[in-house]
Image (cartoon, rainbow, N blue to C red; front, side):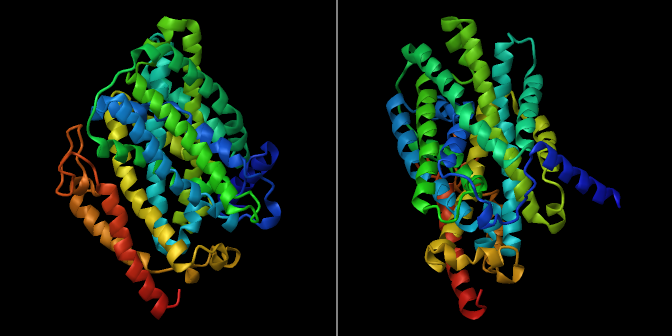
Length: 458
């Protein structure tokens, strides 16, 4: 047996012995789906009851000069609307039995899915780095500056790696309980910082763009965490559990961040009031980062398997190690500029995801009538000759425009942090790049897909 064959056999044996998930992007058959719909609630509750969510709320007053009332209204309405997108995307999991990037083949085509999967891998690395930074900074505060940000990054990353390597089942187990201590810690923060609430006002559209970018980031992962739920699960149940798990922590914790408006100063709020118990709460918040990052660590291994047949043959256990090795140095380098890095990353992320979700939903509702049966997923999920070609034109068009205008940012963004201001920026300072991205995708995709079905038949 070759060295490669031995490594595969060793990986399979280890997965069986340790109870680690062995399945990659392969479709989950109907007779192997024991999960309940309520599992969606805990995964997303845990993934969003984290420090990064708190940081998004802080950006309203800190970077966009919004007052408390304005920030809370923007947070509520933007999340209430945006959460509909990942919640609906999650319904693809039980109905098709496929991970999100694999089901993207039905709208983006065989080669187009490779491109969006590659972008999703980049997003996984970026999310992991961005999420790890506040966790590392919090650890440094707890340790009274006796450890560096770099050491904090490594500690958070290793804990995440251990949980993420075990796969789907253990992600759900961790998520089911990890949100509870995180929520308690945030309630303590609320009690300690209530006296510091303030109020100002301005620049709503840009803050909406950042919130949208944060929330819509889940559309490329949403169905990864419910493919083991029965196909007959009503779509409304999947949607409702997912939507609830998203919107509650996003709104409440972003509200808290906006109220305290004290970026990177959790210790200044907690420790003087409740002493060592405050430090304990901060440690709980560090662990909350793990619940968010295991989504990225686990999903990257699935996304990268869509890119190439050869990559799909690599044992899933390898990819959590790879992504951890990549994002650790990125997080260390960015630890001293968290707010700016977070804002910039959310803006860019929101642009490609607005294009991705527009194409998927147009294919689903316009060309397949919202009927999951029309996908014939069991027969066609891994057949290149049954996937669309229309996305090729979309990819060429988007690539040309991104090449000229740096991923919409120069074209449609007005940023308060000193970035370029483009011609499509709102004259009042708002960012409309993500709306332009989604609209452009629709304009290109609809006629291209219509002509393809008419003259090619697939």
